[in-house]
Image (cartoon, rainbow, N blue to C red; front, top):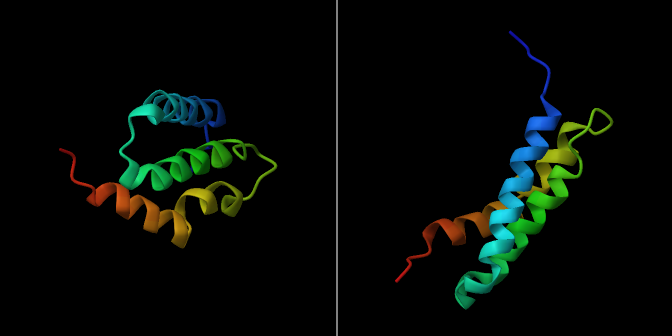
Length: 81
């Protein structure tokens, strides 16, 4: 069953992700800093498009493009410590 998108909740979650990202900015290892900052920026950009006036691509492209996936892979594969 199709349910309408809860834009308010989606924006709330995106804000939380952005807040966590901002809080972590100073402690990000230099090896992955560019990828990290780019991903946080992508979340902010995507969340700014969460409205009924946007199309799906407006919301998904910033976080699911080929470049974004490469950055996410770099973050996922990073070994801490």
